[in-house]
Image (tube, rainbow, N blue to C red; front, side):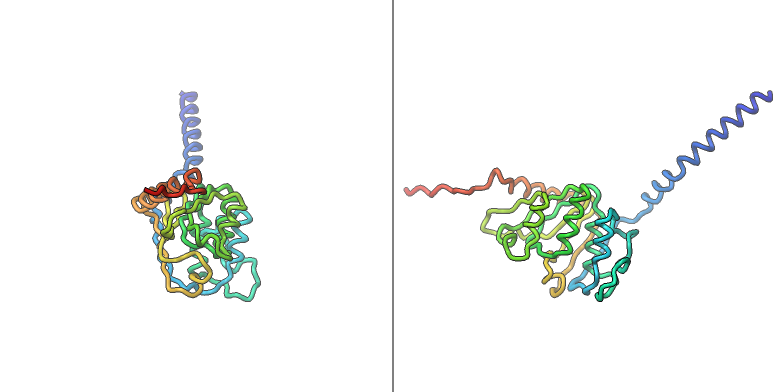
Length: 230
């Protein structure tokens, strides 16, 4: 009888140990289930604030997200140290862990360009679609992204590739009127929506993949044939 009792006690102890070991994972699962999908609206022009600490934290391996270093941590520059529309956009981008799709008409913001390069350096798969005319303008980040090894595709059409959206980890959509330029960020009346919505993400991802294939360099016409005269 005593031996059976000890066996029961031992089994209970083992069960308790396993339950305690599984408890953190269960709590994380419950928190994830309770977390509200991300929905945020940003308006521009953005207040000029320091984004250096945010980018430094990302470069050091931090997420740059809500739990990352604050905007003023580790920086003593003269710019205001607080949140702004630009810093919140940077945080949304730097939250990427697996993939980032960018479909942008104009891209010349040094801060956003640096964030994209940091993601690439962390192993995030980055793909960029842009407009062939605006990618060649002075100050464009596209050449720097290509030099860093990031895949870039562009149009050859007469019309503009005028989209302005990004997809983070195939879960979060960032879209709106904002061109990713310093001019637009600091001077224009613009808007950006950040939404974690599977239906919208799916539609924009389908559009991205469609354009990505359409702009495949193997389909470029470098030496178009002359039209035949009748």
